[in-house]
Length: 397
Image (cartoon, rainbow, N blue to C red; front, side):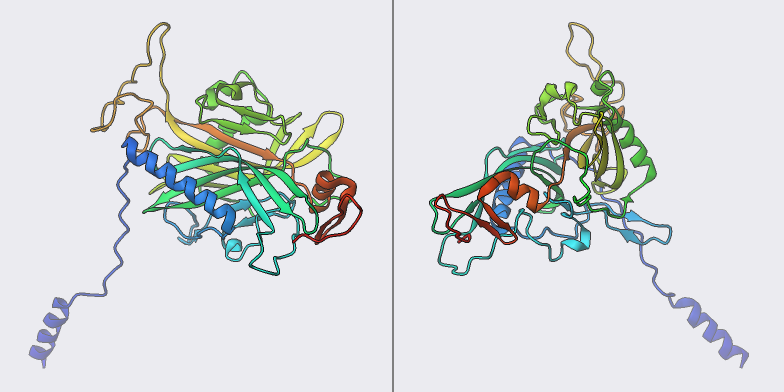
């Protein structure tokens, strides 16, 4: 009996136990530096954005490049994608985008005959796309003419819109991190009959990242002009948009930008990052609601989105070209030694977050938008009906 037990023990000892899941290996950091490949990436994203204007499809929800927050139990909570629209209620996050409504404003009746021309069309007027230094992300800006064609009237209604967006490169495709669409108008205190911007649950990857990004965006929100040069890029890829139609700054002009007449306070927020891992991420984004103090007028509720990139600080001596900082050359094999061209995903020596794109907007309801655009010609905003010059009442065709 003892011999049998001993043999059984040896057999059990030789059998492997239940296999434990292996820890996921962190992706090796890399950067896309080939100029031709970078140009190809930009061209592919341009085609994707323009095609999506026509299709108006929902974004892809799952990608490993959009890093989620992981709670104490190890459960991931998605930060994106996010779609912010023109109206007060037009903000959709993560799973809410599985079957989203149209991104375009106003309630236009559907085309009854598919053989007829489309009821609406979106024309790109100024699509600009900028690839991140590591080539894994890209941010975009466009001025869009959204047009509604009217039946039985020789008339087309055109509504100017502004769009900013952030995309992540995953595999052989681009995936949306967030999109922010707005109609430019001056910020104003909320009326009693006006809907407030929809609130949403704040989600952030880490508090440390929130603190870092807050220090970057604070001088912009509080108009500390002397500190802005330290926290914002000044290249041609940098853009700031305020609520008003005249509030637009590109390149070095962002140093004098004033996004709103008064100081702004960040409220609900979604703070995420793009990269193979959080430590290797060089792009972060912030989407949320903002309260602006309008001098002598009260408070305005606004929407805001920001894109940040980790870039290397460069020392410049008077009369000399920028020189690499100590330690930059280590670990950058096969990359240019210019510190501005060396991605922080490869070597993070002396890297800081800087703001590269900001968009603040004042939401507007369909009713107010239709009244603003069509004036006395408006018959109904739900569904949209516009009077012809002769006073007749055609519906959109």
